[in-house]
Image (cartoon, rainbow, N blue to C red; front, side, top):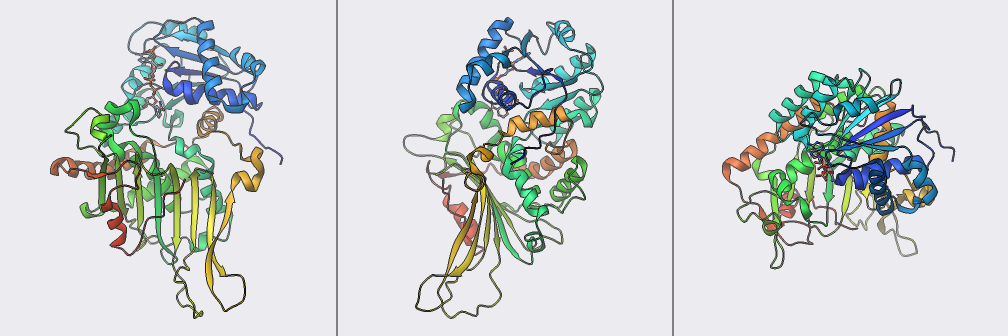
Length: 481
Ligand code: NAP
């Protein structure tokens, strides 16, 4: 297979928070993998920035360890040493004056400049302001902003306004790493690169759509942060909303940042308010472990699980609900979109199994790929019996292990920043619109002091979420790892 990777210009990439967890686990190993695959220009440089005093050798040791732990099979000592040559470190205080002049001196002219804000959101404004004040960022510089982008619409709007004081929207890259996943982009390829699906992709032929992001882990060490967010803010407002948009949007006129983001925004604006009775919240709880213990807050009303029925008020989707669910401590780690088509209007077969609805599943994890169930005749003599079989396209099987060894979402997105391609990043108005839809739901819970339903760790979530589907004569797809 011939690889047609778009070349990347020489760059200086500053990682604020270069000693943090995200930099260690994702950003730095991801950059190394791009280097290993020959997709980083010779003139590329990466500059770690954080408050800790550290010399260049110390930072390179830190990065060496991170690569060893998180870069998989590409960990080759010679390649690692060559990569580390590209690294330097500057001690900078985001909220003070220390280090900023040093950073300014470190930056080169005539290269792409990118600044990754891998720090808590409370520092975004201070860093943006100082990049401007110390003339570190030019008009072509790009800033990369991590989630969470705001806590509600008001705070997202304030953050947008602060960033806009120093940077144009075309310079701001708001990361949602789900958009960097291979399968998510494949969703667009499948919908808009084939004639097969798009004519059926509407309320006339689609019964309903399910979007699931289930994790087996609990809140881990992020208890305090998580308890202030919950599944709705942490997952639905961003990741699930992005998946919903890409599934539901109209075909953009071209694969271009604003054309795609305009269509996503129209979907968010067409979402109907969710009825109280069509949303279920849960908290994991058993004798030995519980959400309340994990977040060290016995009074917490925050959800570690949420499921809901969503309606999109437009011609394409009128009458076809979208069911979303996400939770922690679930039975399996699964992220998928299931498009369930309607049953044929009339069966000509006597021995009808009653299971003849096609299902297209787009799996983000595990085993990235897609499958489509089709109804066929059960092989063998003895009449016309029908069975549903999957046409499975697991990328690793269909394309070979090597072709399926695709870049991690972060690698792809960082390289898109350097290329100046914003298609897979959220625009400011999109984020605000998503909060505008989320806020009243959360406000309703707060006002009513709603208590989430308990669910067993390792289960599929609260009973009430099953009932949400059963009421409509439907059921969730089984959670299978
Ligand atoms: P973290 O482990 O707490 O790291 C924070 C980084 O910021 C450290 O390098 C810290 O170094 C630096 N820092 C803190 N205060 C600073 C200041 N005043 N000036 C300069 N540097 C400062 O956090 P993280 O987990 O990497 O998360 C970073 C961001 O990514 C957050 O917005 C988080 O929500 C987001 N995020 C993280 C993950 C993840 O898996 N970790 C996933 C999605 C999004 P010093 O203490 O040395 O200054």
